[in-house]
Image (cartoon, rainbow, N blue to C red):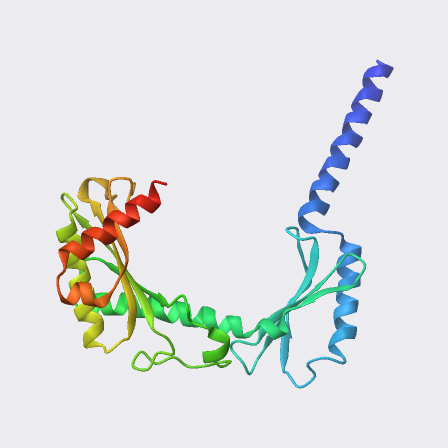
Length: 248
């Protein structure tokens, strides 16, 4: 009986140990969190005193073991950044200088919404996405807190569409490309290239998403002139080249 009690006590202690270990792994050490809070207070007494900052409580990021303070300037939509400390309150990273990336993310979201708007306004029965051209240097062309205007975008865009058809064909791809081209031309939006994906109707789920893309056909980075000329031979070459890369 005594041995069973000892075993039970041991297992209880072991269970508590693992529970504490899990808590520390995912939520951090409350003492270290307090140390980070004190370190952040000290740091902000001499940094960013010109900003009207809101701040969250320190939280633990188990992915890199940092104790993080999130900050937001009330007068700037894009000036949100964080301070990261180790468990001893030593600064690991200050992301203030990276805040222009927040502007870039807003631009990406703006283009996403613009794609939806264009599809709706033109009565397109498929999805359209706009995204910045791959060569776009946001650090050189965006400014913090910038407002975006659909009639004066700061970059060329890449356009993608996703449609459904009974038996997807290159004709379906060209048809979709032409519709998207005309819609973007009407809005006078500068496009770097077009891409399309056509999925069989049989692979369409009730929510409009594709159950699988394995039976779909797609083409990437189609130049404008191929669409304007309706050049099916050029579209075929781009399609074949894409398949070669996909199946390497």
